[in-house]
Image (cartoon, rainbow, N blue to C red):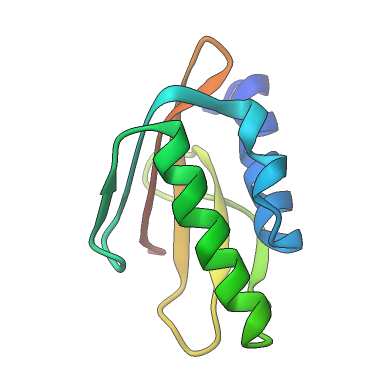
Length: 113
């Protein structure tokens, strides 16, 4: 079950993707954030590297008129809150996290199940 802080962090990720604004995420990311994505084959191991990556992705979406469908979701396997994301015809995605000390320590994208 998700804690209040977990839900708050997931909500901020949802808001950042909805607005395509990485500045929303910055205060919630651990300096040693570990981000990985099955689709992008990305394995990023710092807050600064992730912010550079996501700013570029968000800008690409804006430049190409792509606006993702984003909502809060719940992973059926463990009941944890996640961000449900759909980019055009791509496979529906969940963005999941592990938090530590009120910050996002790990974040990953996986196929929605």
